[in-house]
Image 1 (cartoon, rainbow, N blue to C red):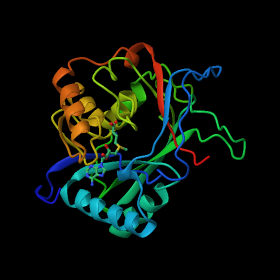
Image 2 (cartoon, rainbow, N blue to C red):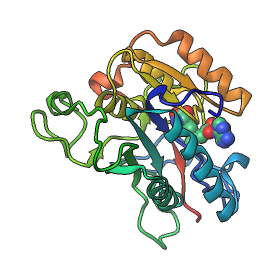
Image 3 (cartoon, helix red, strand yellow):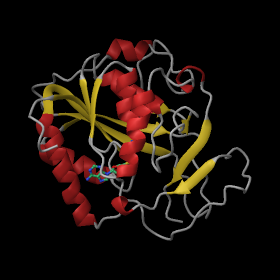
Image 4 (cartoon, protein in one colour):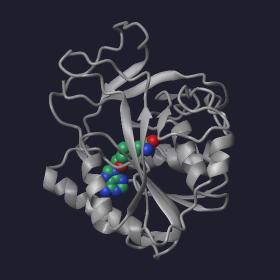
Length: 270
Ligand SMILES: C[S@@+](CC[C@H](N)C(=O)[O-])C[C@H]1O[C@@H](n2cnc3c(N)ncnc32)[C@H](O)[C@@H]1O
């Protein structure tokens, strides 16, 4: 990102490591049939997702500074997180002068059940949407009327022609098309990314994914006629993203009719 010119990007969609690959390394036996939770579930345990707290805070400060530098005054940044990291992201936004526009709760109604019975079932992720202009210079793009007009057929919280709320009901499912070329351990569904991209950018805009993973943000940008740029450290994910992008020609069925299959990530410690 340091090599990019300043004021060159319209939208940053950041899905950073949540720093949650901790605790016991165990796996779920996918043969076990749990009512309503069929599919392929894994606990995330990745080296890139395990840092000390101070290291993680420094890492967040480092990439967010670069994101701020490359964003145009009309641009904005979405960052994904969970309770493990989103407090740090929030603090760094504020320290850098990135004004928070909205905190959005992505409610995952098909989240994996809590197995220990020692805490509530984690069923959401948090998104922080911010811009760099500050309170006196709010030039960021927000396609308010478009968002209001979209039907979101699977969302039981947001209705067509009503203002879109800050709680989004989007199942964490990927269509078979999204998994056609392989899986990423923390792959996001295209329908979540589409909502971010449509709300905060226009056709022809440049979307940057600092943590591209399997390329979901870039694929969604391409399918919605935006330009895209992604960074990713793991070569296997780069290959997967390239393959997906090469073949991304039309939106998967699930964006229209909600067909889906479970595939997700356990993010609980026990
Ligand atoms: C949460 S995942 C992103 C998943 C992506 N949204 C998707 O749908 O596939 C974070 C990704 O960041 C990558 N990563 C970790 N550290 C990185 C760094 N310093 N620079 C670029 N990518 C990094 C990891 O390899 C991982 O693929």
